[in-house]
Length: 226
Image 1 (tube, rainbow, N blue to C red):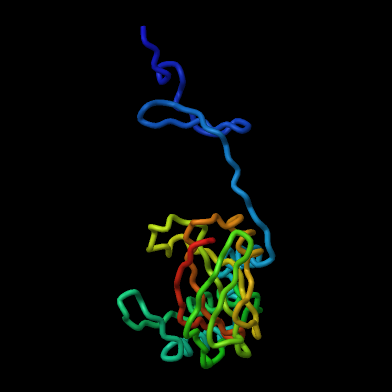
Image 2: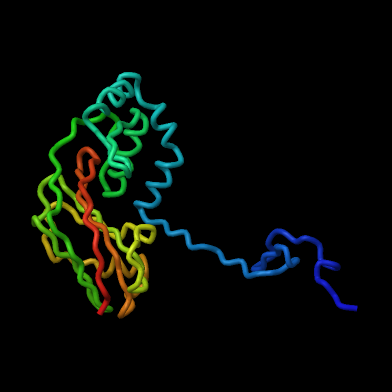
């Protein structure tokens, strides 16, 4: 008689120690229980607290503050959808969007909205990477007052991958006054490990306003690690 595991094992579900029991159409099976890492940087902790309590934070604003957020959105903070259409967020969504940026760049959250200010966008940006060094060149330089710059990168990808948006992760934030040629290998390695020679690394680079949470227009590109 040929034994089928599903004849003598129930439909297992759950974990015992380092092993997970599960099943699919072929019957029950076991796999290792890999526990994902849970980094606890200051920014990540702040972001988790903010996202967990964002509705509560909005409700904690005064009626005057909520009204101000609703009134300032249109026409001061236009957003553009993927089709090029202009739209405006509700006050609560604008509060969350701008404060998310501020947390990302290490700035304090704001309870009352501010009028937008002029954003200096990059006219050019490019990265250079090897297994032992990484830098970003950009213009205009240095970063002007009230501006930070956010750098997103991908892990090492196949050179044949051209649409890399889904792989981008925030790597580091450069503060006001940072000049072209800024180094970021330490931050990149902490996020993805040592760059692999011959792999492609994509990036996205844009400015952010320290006081309001406005974002500039992103520049994207890629390089091959040497």
